[in-house]
Image (cartoon, rainbow, N blue to C red; front, top):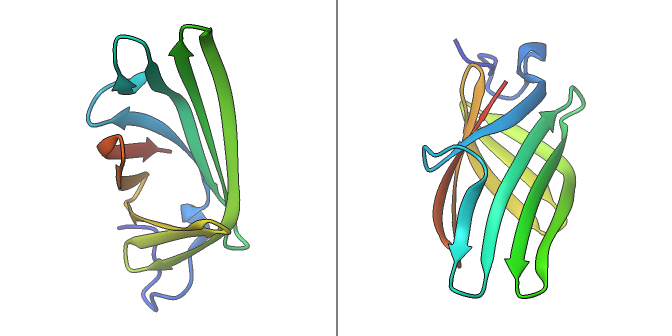
Length: 123
């Protein structure tokens, strides 16, 4: 049984809470997204928090290493989410991201300039 209610419009309280990034492409963290002789980008950590008021917070911590050394940065995205069946849509001022909500997981596939990545968050 998932977190969605039978009307497909509301979210049961059991869905809310923090989901922490567990794997990227079935690999553990940190995960290297881009690497060359002079540059490396990694995902160090990430978490999505779904709140009762249908808002979310998504924190992503990454590290970029080049000739100047490593730089760690954290980005925080805030917005609203919708849930229809098991399809979770996270929307903010930059657009939206679609994921699949399981009983205790959020799975999302991101296809960007650095490649295609499957992220699995666990509660």
